[in-house]
Length: 222
Image (cartoon, rainbow, N blue to C red; front, side):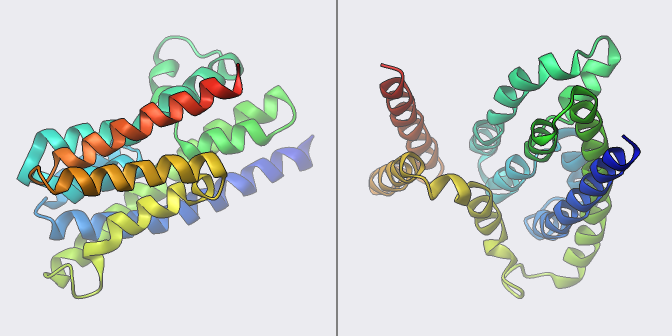
């Protein structure tokens, strides 16, 4: 049991460190996009969902409604993680609030990959704390570096948000259904961009992707 607990701790720590590296990119990109250090840190502490944060600062203050909607759409998946994790964690009271905040890709992956209920719970909490700490520390480092860089194009940070989001969805895109959904979003966004201003085409493309994904999922169960 002790050896098993040690393995869970090692996995949680390694995931936290690896995820923290993305935090440097987010901090730098956020500052160069016009957010100050405190706003950047607030996004990491309160939103704490890498993909959603990148989506938010990618649009930024230029179109706040689109920024909020885009980040929300990217973060919807966390709600589905919560449904699968709720029977495992069985949290109550204030612990449920903390559990909700730590429900992300990494905690869901580590927790559901464990064998016993005890390991699943330990995997969730240790991974969540590890990622939270390293992500926020890296955000501060990235924000400080971003202030020194100035122009985000200097080191390619202007493309960091798109690259990070692509890395997050790449495993799903490799599957046939994921490829169809991604292609739908891309094609629809491009077509809508021909007749609409920036912002709405992305949201409409995402909506088309959701509809296609729903239809494909329903087809599997019929």
